Image 1: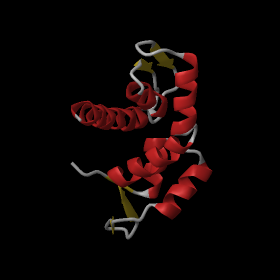
Image 2 (image 1 turned 180 degrees about the vertical axis):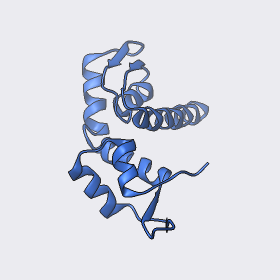
Image 3 (image 1 turned 90 degrees about the vertical axis):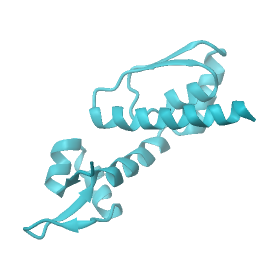
Image 4 (image 1 turned 180 degrees about the horizontal axis):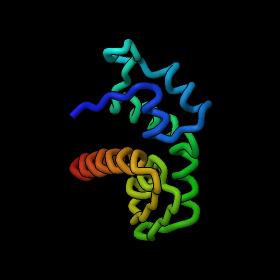
Length: 128
């Protein structure tokens, strides 16, 4: 089901710092307006933008370098602040087990989707 948010609802649901919310509103296009003429933002578009932002910090390469430097294949990588799941994803793709914690349910959903995609990518690689 597609969910839509006004700018005010985005602030409440995502609990973003003001500067991040301003960036989001300038980059994510509203898809329609409500009865009051307020722009409405599609949840999936907001989640995708946030995932891209969080993937950039610490970055896939930095996460992968750390994981390869400080763990071995089969080790458990623990990330108590998992965010959008970049380190967890890189752990999986580099054949490590992973355990991540994240307090914000929005980022939990983003991380789950990214891990599902990584699992799919890994299966494709193994099938070759």
